[in-house]
Every structure is written in structure tokens, then in C-alpha cells.
Image (tube, rainbow, N blue to C red; front, side, top):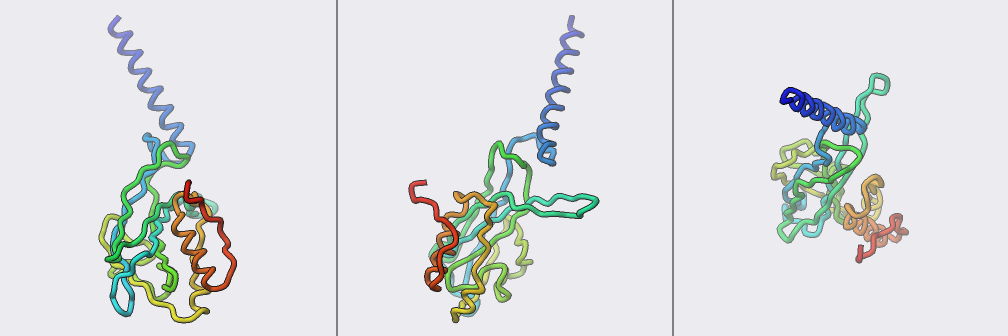
Length: 200
């Protein structure tokens, strides 16, 4: 009788494990827990020339998964995002965040986009810098100082407008979209992106 109970328990565990791995495998990532983990970032944003802190810059964390195939090589896909703004000292923090019961689970790579109207957008502007680090992929969990150059002409500002990252849900980039629209309005251009309602 005991052997039968043990056999049933073992069989149940094997089946449960198989189901979890199978469901996880549908997303291409074998992760048994049903969440996506977004890496944390922190640091300070300053003016390239004056080294003074830049208050009110939006910091958007953009999170990518990369898949590999024999035919096409590697492809990266934007899957998520989170944002914050710099304080009066130019400092910011994006906490480690979990998204539960999402289609693609795991630990995506994260990069930052930093934008404030009138300044070169990080990392696209050639004079923007992540001091001491690769500016394309700043390290998560480390305090990094970011330098943004002040732009002085309308032409510079028009060429500087950042990507909207349409793959990221609007709730995770509200401030980012508002600042892009603010800059476009200042430059006399129409807004391209719908802003979320304050009540959302």
C-alpha cells in the first residue's frame, strides 16, 4: 500500500514538473515561475558642460529578449519598460520589478533611454555619456553618472527626438510620451503619440 502511494506521488510530481516546463517552454524560455524580472537601474543625470544636475529628465528602462536561430542568427525584441524622473539632484532609481503571468518570462536585458527637452537624448546623441561604462548597455544595479549635452539650435533638437518604443504599453511610458510631445509642440510640430489620461 505504501509503495503504491509513493508511486502515485512520484508520478504526480513528474507530471506536474512536465506541465510547468511545457507551459514555460511555449515562450521559448524554461522558467517555472510565471513572471518576468526587470533589472534595477540607478544613477545621476548631469549637464555635459556644467556638470550640474538635470532635474525632470525621464529615464525609461527598455527591456529586450534575444532569440537565436540557425537561419536568421539573433533577433532582439522589446518586451517591457518602466520609467521614472530625475529629482532635484539629478538622481533616479528604477527598482527591480516583476511582471506576473506574462507571455514571455525570464530575465531580459535592459538598457536606458534618458530624455529631457533641450538636451541630447541618451544613448543616441553622440555626446551623451555613461561615465566609465558602455553607454549602449549600462550595468544594472550600479550607480552610474550620465551626461547629456545641452542643445542650442532648432535643427539639433529636431534631429534629437527619441524612439517612441511602441512595443511598450502606454502605462509604462506615460512621462516619456508627454515629454516627447512637449518637445514637438515647442518645435512647432504636431504631436505624434496619444497621451494617456491622467485618470488612468
